[in-house]
Length: 300
Image (cartoon, rainbow, N blue to C red; front, side, top):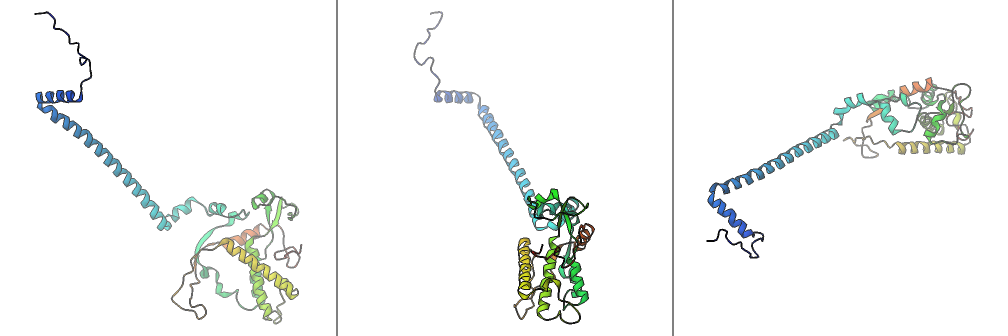
C-alpha cells in the first residue's frame, strides 16, 4: 500500500462548491447538530424584530412631534388673543408701525388701543349740525396745526431725491423741510365738504357765521376744491383699505333693507397723542388764507 494517496487531477478538484453542495453541507451539519437550525432561526427573528421596534418607535416619536407643532400652529391661529400680552410686552407698537407704514417723524407718538368706535369718538355728536362759532372752532382744532419738520436726511425715505421744489424750514430750527401730517390734511378736507354742504343750504349767511375762507371763491372754483378733497379722501380710504368687519344687525332700514352696527370694534391710534406730538414739534405757524397752509391747493 502506497504511503501517500494519489491526488485527484480532475477539473472539479479546484472548482467552487455549488449551492446544492453548500446547502447539503449545512443540512448535514444541522442534522448532526439539531439545535443549530433553531438557534439560527431565533437569531434572525431577534435581529428582524429589533429593527421593527426601532422603526416603530421612530415613527411614533416623529408623529407626536408633528402633531404637537400642528396643535401649536392651530391654537395660535384661532386663539391669537392668548398671545397678545406676551407679544405686546416683547414688541412695541412703534416696532410694528415701522415695518408697515412710510417714514414719519411722528413715529414715536403712535400707540394703539382697542375700543368701540362710537364710544371713543362720538362725543355727543358735537361735530354734527349747522355751523355755529363753537362748532367751526371745534372742527378747526382737529386739523389746523403748525407745520412739522422732515429732516433732510429722511427725505429719501419718502422717495424724494430732488429737494428743490420743497420749502426749507426757516431759521435755526433745524435742517429739514416743512410738512403736515396726512391725517390733518384729510380732516381738513372733510371739514371743507361739511362746510360746502351748509354753504349750499345757505347756512353761512345767518347768525353772523361768515363763509369759510376756502369757499370764498366763484362757484366753479369752490366745486373744483371740493372735488380735489373728495379725490384725496377716496385715495386715502383705498390705500389704507380698512378690513374691520361691519356687523349686520337683525333690524331693517327702510332705505337699504339692512341696518349695520356702526359701533364697530377697532384698534385705533391714540389721536390725542398725535395732536400733542404735532403741537410740541411745530416749526412754522400757518394762518388761514395766507397761501401757505393746508388746503391752499396750487396757490404757492
